[in-house]
Amino acid sequence: MLLEITQGLKGLLIGDKGYIRPSLKEELAKQELDLQPPLRRNRQNPRPKAAVNPLMKARRLVETVLGN
Picture 1: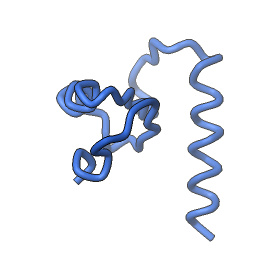
Picture 2: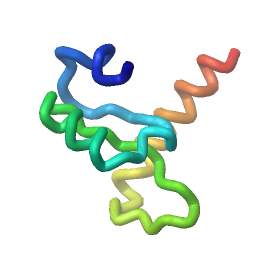
Picture 3: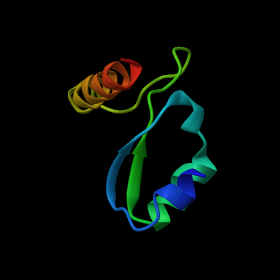
């Protein structure tokens, strides 16, 4: 479903932990989408904290708004 609803979009896509799949990331990269899901606690995060923190703040805001 994700590939269908992102058709025609480009840029950064903040996802959920359920979207941690290399094959999905590759498919979205073909559409010029950069998928950035949070990693699970038991995995090392190769991304710099300065890049991850704004993504997680935006994700938390979206979850808060949708949860109300």
